[in-house]
Length: 517
Image (tube, rainbow, N blue to C red):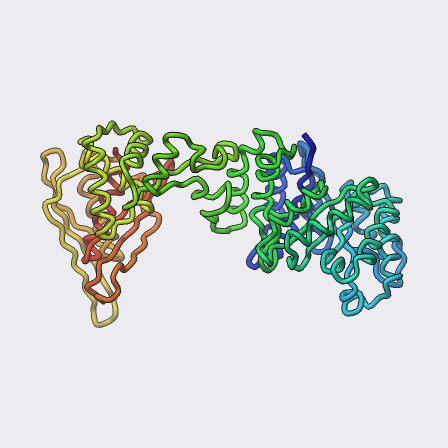
């Protein structure tokens, strides 16, 4: 198979996205993760542009990578300055990296408004800078900034800029859609001509942004015309609307177009890798992201679930395991017996046709009442256990009471009392908390902790309330969602009631009972 290389610029271009910031040590961890994934080239950024970058390059110089090549990024020489007298170029060639990536101007608009140099001087800046780096034994990737805008404005000059870099010794010329303004047919036409004129002398790369929503499509269009290196970022991080998303491009190249990009085992680590980078960057994972999102292979409609159970190819375009993801069957009012059976099997619950039919009816009734089991899989599993006859309650509730007192000085005190029966023994407990739910949680745990010591490991990690029928004001039905964890697992439960404390109680009890099923 023919190879297409990946060039990751998450550490530079990706960090230009709003709110993006990583320490030098975190950036080094990203490099190790990308190297393990099989990314061939990783751009570290501008060497010595600031103390963080200095630390990063020092760390990277000591890393032992399996296959990735680290690239230092810089610009062509300044106008009216020889390369050897340009401090930035001197720093660039002084970096430990075997590859340097030079970015230069291509578009007449920038020459007139930004660099304020003639077209001839710009060509000299490109050629001189590439030649200087080559003389210092550096391999050179040349990024032609705003290439596609320039090509549409003056294709002859845009090609001349590329030729200047190739003639000076660049091993790769990368065509940049810096504004993200181009559409796939425009990318195709320009890339086709570049490959025809320069492809035998240098590798052609593609670097696009997603301002028109075409970042992935434009990258693939360039590859179809002969580009053999694709630049982008993990999850499409980047300025404005982001860069081309390598997370989507990689499986498209390998699984759809048949190119040799990374090993099969490396591709199977894709989901894990991109979620790791999301966590490092403190970015909420996109559940709908192609290939790696938790909903990428989620099925909700009853007919879809039945189709997938019969043959996964009916509603899945690839095997989720190929990219390290997994199938999800989502319960809802759209579900049929296939959904119920699939979920029961995954939970180790034996369920006959009659029990499955009852579970479907119960699910649809409760979803109509406001329950949302897609977001509360633990509560849904308990529903299945009740219908299958395998449900085991932790206790029997006799009653609970919650008292909230607000004093003149502003102090608010909340106390809950609870009466329950556990294994035939009656317990009465009271507890204070910083609110009704917290007080109930403490009182219930106090009542049943002796019989169920594992409760100490269960922690409520999130609490969300949604009003389902706002028109009823304070008498509206509320839905409560609780997230819980015990150090090994995480799960979600739900409760619905016109009384927010009752809804919270229901979700709380489900959370604790699920931990013991």
